[in-house]
Length: 259
Image: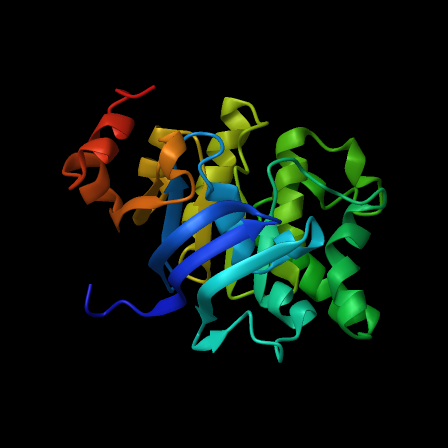
């Protein structure tokens, strides 16, 4: 692991929604150009953790944090951080496709237009590149100006990925991106994740143990014990977590012996 470069360093992070402690003392490195999976049962803090990495949780509730999250050396919870710029650099794809009621083209161009004015020729080029990057171009190239809401669920999710890619993030967060998809669409998203790993750092929340094992390089297991909600039990290479976990609780979870 000596040649790995952390894109994000989380140090002793505790996270509160009001008075409720959703995360407790989490520390881990998220390595550049690697896929990191977050596993654990519902309510264990996975989604809270991933939303803490680009401060998107602050749009949902009154939150308080202790500890730090460093993005290439900068503490993202510093008062000097520009949140719009941070969220462009650390993009996010949610559990359910959250497309705008506009065309396929305009969905992908949306973030670019907010960022700055660009000539149409440049927009066209970036939109096509992003849709190609999301492995969707051949399916939508002849209907770019039709409503994105007419796409299938799997296509909508890949279009959400294209929209995130268009603003050229360094990190891509995915909060259970396949949970609402059929097996074929899930396979396409997994293939897409594999194709993106050379250019992006990816963090994915998943309930699917097989998916975590297939797509990720590293895995973090969050506690399934109600008395330890929000604690990370173990972090390591995906191969180690699934074949030789250090903690018996991790072993029980990945082998299905829990609850």
